[in-house]
Amino acid sequence: MSGTTTAAAALRRRAAGAGANRWVVLVVLCVSLLLVALDATVLHVAVPAVTEDLKPGAIELLWIVDVYPLVCASLLILFGTLGDRVGRRRILLLGYGLFGVASAMAALAETAQVLIVARALLGVGGAMIMPATLSILRQVFPDRRERALAIGMWSAVAAVGAAIGPLLGGFLLEHFWWGSVFLVNIPLMLVSLPIGRLLLPESRGDGKGPWDVVGALMAAAGLFCLVLGVKRLGGGELGPFTVAPLVLGAVLIVLFVRRQRRLTHPLVDLRMFARPAFSTSVGCIVLAMLALVGLELIAAQYLQLVLGLSPLQTGLRLLPLTIAAMAAGLAGARLLRRFGPRRMVSCGFLLTAVAVVLLTAMGGEDNAGLLVFGFVLLGFGLETTLFGAYESMLSESAPEQAGGAAAIGETSYQLGAGIGIALLGTVMNAAYAPGLASVPGVPAAASASAGHSLGEAYDVAGQLGGPAGVALRRAAQDSFVHGLHVTLLVSAGLLLLGAVMALRLPRVMQCGEPGAEPGAGGVGVPAPREVAESRVSA
Image (tube, rainbow, N blue to C red):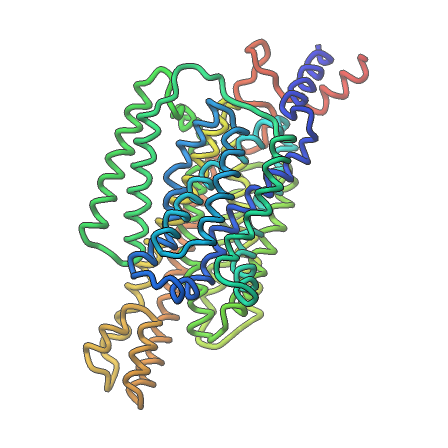
């Protein structure tokens, strides 16, 4: 009996790998993710050069920066579930092609409008690539132990891509024009397309029932409106153009959920959320990003505007965070096997909260040792949390729902990041502005303008000059540091809430496939003992 089980598991692994070594497949998937992660951050350092060359208006510049993540986040569920129906490899390869074409279009753009369209197409390509990489990984690594190791490598590559994006962009801008930050994608796409076609296995879900086109468009429109509203809220916009997208997005998502519950063959099987491990993992992803992404932006402002570091120096100061995140990703599989999802994710949240509280010791003077130590704890704790949550979420989803589950995870990540920027940005502004209400010698109008941001406060202080300008600049720095401390404490509270939420995760790492019971038509991954027994009986 055990020999039959082992033989069936081996057949399943061979079918999943489609003749290619699964670790080679992992390398191809990691290169795919690296491209998407790079493109999310590489443009940041090129914005001044783009502004000087294309002369975009304020609204156009905002869309140049934001349209990529906005389109990508809104289409994740659409393409994730479409891949389950028509083939995940097919969607991934189409995403490669579109990403390459859009990169060339962006690099050669001569107007802001063309660049916006190209960035939107890059977002479409990214939405095709991101869930496909995770869902193919889910199929290629049916053994949960190996899958945990693969997810660790996958997440480490994501950390590397996000970190080196600004550094690569800065290097290219020093030697070439701003379009080079997009051209770097094309050689990688030209290599990835034939290699992906040759090595990546094709996989899809059970294909029962028609694909819910109306539901897919409803989800895309709802997520687009929600993310747009959240981004505007994070920028301090509270008018009707912020409230209307939020309300419309919420209504569309509610209607989407009701529609999925009525359908016999839904686009997204909402019964996945009935599993505590799945719903808790999604909640942990949202909460981790909500607590930390806005904080990262505020930390970058602190390093540049308070400590006076250059963008390159700021990137180097944040590098320990990335290195620690890479280490956590590579060690994640071993930690998960030893401690289980519950303790791993809870401890990751707690470690990150400790790091955040430690960073409240930051003041107006540079303390490099404290920052390095705090960022190392922050990176290791955050990656440990996200690794455990992503791995548990994928393992709790059925193989035929892998694309939808991956899309839900990536959407949760994007929504959490957007809400975090809005929430922590609001907390920061609320704590920062009152300190500039009555600075001696500074007119009320100047104080009000300085209360918008630290950068604007510096501009106002430069215009005032003299003792009043010096006083305003000093007050703005002190208020910013105070606001940073308040924001850190709020973030720590959210992380502690996440640690409590993670207690609903399983205590131990179950290494069988969900729903794969003996005689139920599924093939469970054999435990080491079963493998040993089969070898003895053979």
